[in-house]
Image (cartoon, rainbow, N blue to C red; front, side, top):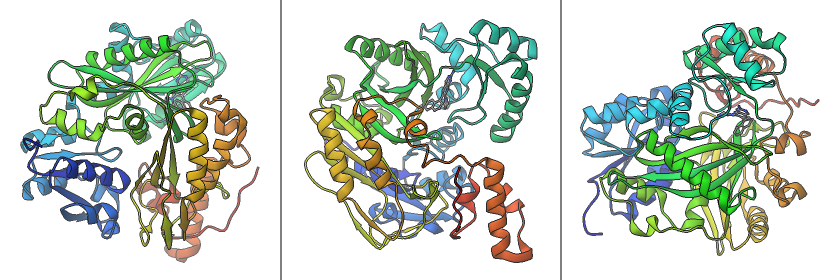
Length: 505
Ligand code: MV4
């Protein structure tokens, strides 16, 4: 390595992605500072970094989301850059703004690009103007019921009401008939207000059972904007992705070129720099529509790395330092097939309830074309404070069929004792004939595994959690404890209680 890109990087995250970023820094010979909450004192990321700084108690708001404290920590420890990972502060424009004030480099896009792409209405208009296909629907937020009615007539029912500040499925409402439109708009507004503090909503044609196909893009300060092909992410459960793969079984070479070009147009229209992901919905007729652009490194980035040979986190760091995208990256080709399974700490046999406890025994699969990106090791105590992703298992093989076999084999060899994981469920999904046939749509799990995914209405879920707390704490139980935990499911906030209840249809 000729010249150091940065003096020291603060990694503003935890779990497997913090570990992934620290390892990329080691490759580049850049020292790292990890931050950790008191719940993560002995977590893998704190042990791997050159320095580790405790920044607060477990609630994210008081630690991993406290951007002021994080920027101060970076300054105090002589860092010159911050990598945000995914989740937490990664898509919050306040972090790049605070970084700029403190003369730190934010490893990611500008606050302006983030803000534009965070607003779904604004980014739709921008992308339509740039010639990118968007889902038929409103070109501005809906101001009154008449606008919603005429937009719905034009698009044709069913339609979908979405929050401008949304993403991830929150605040979305499907409307099948005109009679239900007004009440659905009102309900969507209330939900958007609660979730995002912004009740702006708009309407789109509802695309039934689409595929979710996204393109990895990279853009540098030297005029290079490229894409590194697609990832098929349709297999998900309640907006939580489970399996990602590349290439997608749905794309022809011609479609891949068209969508890749559209992804590059999206990045350029947004003035985007660094690594980002352009999401598309892909319908039964083979049409694709821009959905949103994610302004971070994504959980599923390794499948792109396996099939292109590109180290995306290294490129993120190089681009942030003002370097040109590496030549080998500019010439990257897509080769072979890669699949990723997310290993969640959850009980797939018990309505996917979060699982917690100490990992008493842990053994990763090894072999050619097998990669494990893990945030845990034997002895790690898994809590319920954070995202339940423990690790990602990624395999690479020359063909999809061989990759599926390799993944099933690797999942069988992946050993966890002490906590429940989604490992066995993943084996069942990969063994399903419809998965093997490549018939992966966003309703795949719902359609083929409905016996395992029992819908619990949020209100019931909340009531069950509150009553569990009440049983445990007697008269001191206060439902406000649940209300304070914005954005987290009550199951994630009730603490280390085992709930002996099974809800069946
Ligand atoms: C849609 C859609 C169908 N039609 N928009 C879900 C998350 C949010 N970011 C956008 N989402 C969707 N938007 C229209 N007009 C279906 C989904 C959707 C979905 C999208 C991507 C991946 C998984 C999904 C699961 C259910 C619904």
